[in-house]
Image 1 (cartoon, rainbow, N blue to C red):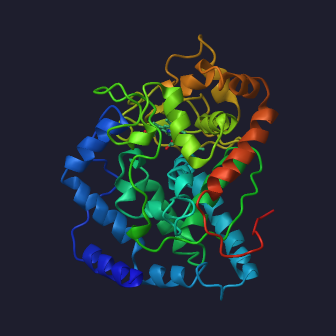
Image 2 (image 1 turned 90 degrees about the vertical axis):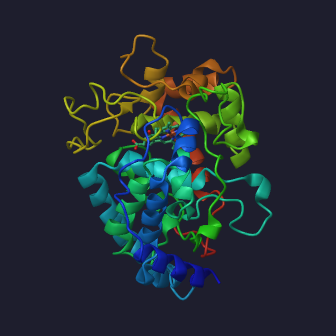
Image 3 (image 1 turned 180 degrees about the vertical axis):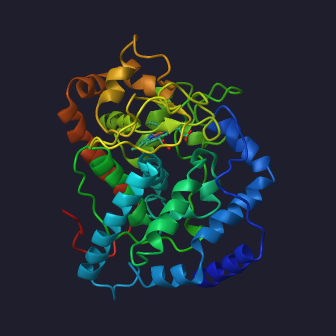
Length: 382
Ligand code: HEM
């Protein structure tokens, strides 16, 4: 049933005009507002088409089906393929300076997990299942711009390494952006995730966090969120979102430190500035190995060197004299304002190793939420 649905989607995609999916349909101020606009926008249909056509070539559907969902591929063969894919992902990250985008892609694939649905049939609880490659999930307001990451993985990695599941490739690209181009801790994540094979595996909209309150309601979560994530305070909202995933306060603060990487864009989340002195191209951005990062201009970064993964996010966030062009969303500020978050934020500000230690545990947990692993013995790479 599912494969026939995939085939129908493919025929539909192939016979419909596809627009440039890199162009976002709206520039708005918050996820909530963005969501309202995107669902009213006729371009949305075309973006859905683009998202569908990326994933549904007969070749990749067939190969993916023969990959991790089929134990004919031995664990050793799968591991060999993972190692080869990792080399190409490292090249992709260095040549396209797309590490932060990949971290966000993997986190949004995983972060819609609902532990309250854990006893339901997989993949109803959501999580790191590769579902983000399908419409409607890729068109959720919170996922604005992530189509770019889906396309990069599809064209540069998946077509060359069809045995590896999308869910694994997204998590691998994220972990390499932290370990390799970012120079952060070694994460040692587990592989062998099974992909959902149709849009039936997409999670409902509204499980991911808001950085700023909806200007109309003053609520975080809400309009584009689920009622269960709504709150008047950013701290309360973060707890509702992350507790639903099974995360605790320490993990919420540690994971927020991923904003050491990357930027917010006006034409995606609607937050931040069009560009700042750190993102307009006048400042050299470097990877952790000292090589220049060939980034495209635009957006607002949380840190000055936004391809390097360290604890600078916590240092800048807590410094009233930090450069005003650096981004501090309300949800970021909550990690120092909230009484129960603050001890962790201060610890991570003062001690990078302590941040890394907590981050590794939280990241690994995030990367496995809702995942169905095909191989009983965990596959990891050195
Ligand atoms: C704590 C709640 C969080 C909120 C409210 C939040 C919100 C946001 C927003 C609004 C953006 C800008 C998106 C854009 O305009 O393109 C963003 C970017 C980003 N987020 Fe988060 N985020 C949160 C947690 C996380 C977590 C847990 C991670 C990873 C573990 C993460 C990783 C990133 C990265 C790397 C970017 C930059 C993406 C890029 O440069 O393309 N965020 N986030």
